[in-house]
Image 1 (cartoon, helix red, strand yellow):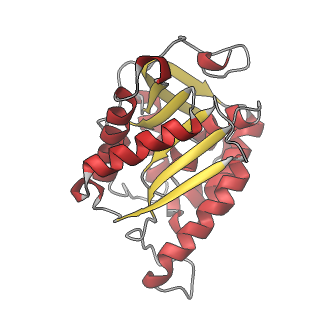
Image 2 (cartoon, rainbow, N blue to C red):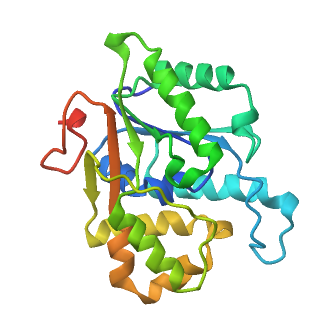
Length: 252
């Protein structure tokens, strides 16, 4: 079957990044017929949180692969590339190889837009930072006529405030050191239905649901405030802002 071209490509590090980090972006586009693909660099095998009950740490790669498959269905992704770089060790892997693989996949699916992590990694995660750098390099290596627009997942001040409030519900910081951007280029604000659809995708990643993500269900206004807000930085864009449908301008 010939690949559908001209859509959106996410390049992430772990299963759950696509839902927790960019689920709204994905849903807004897939619900409007934009073909969306995902590259996920690792199986997330280092993210053992003792869930589900009865499972063992050695089971986690299979569990998270299955969770990603379920989330991909919830988000209506057209394709998922799940790679097996070491969780927590992406920066120590062959950066040229990763960049080449991303470049080849961009050439295969030919997206109009690529979305990845920026140099802050959202909250400083080294896997995010490494994958973001490789993604930027892969896009830059495309010939100008073939080069897609590039956006970075971002955290602004209001979103950082949400995480602080949400984590306070259970008295934890979960290792987050958020690095909010003073200025963002695109802000996707989800309606109530979209927030619930994003929540269903997040809930597919049961092994990764921190206590605050469960506690927040009792605070629907706070949940909508945070899950309904997704800021992005436009690294290179052919069209500023959003369309009337709330899509990236490249899909006007």
